[in-house]
Image (cartoon, rainbow, N blue to C red):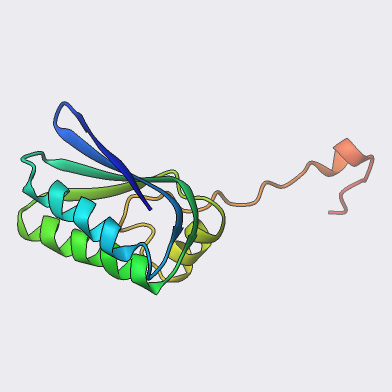
Length: 119
């Protein structure tokens, strides 16, 4: 749900928390409308406190993204983890929102486990 708006130099941050679903979407949209009216170049959605997203939240994010892009402004998302991060990546919109791709899996050195590598 909508938790607050913070302004930092030329960035405005919308902090969201809890489960973002059809019941919380109206509150979220109110906060997003307020962000659109502010004169900043960067907008950050902080979802570090969000435990779950559904299609309503994705629709609200899409609404905000399109409105800001029409004004020549940028939207970035921070703090995504767990189910919200998986959903954003599965839908292919994580990179559009500035969420880094997952790190490639690290290979463990076989010698560390006492195994010999065959060549």
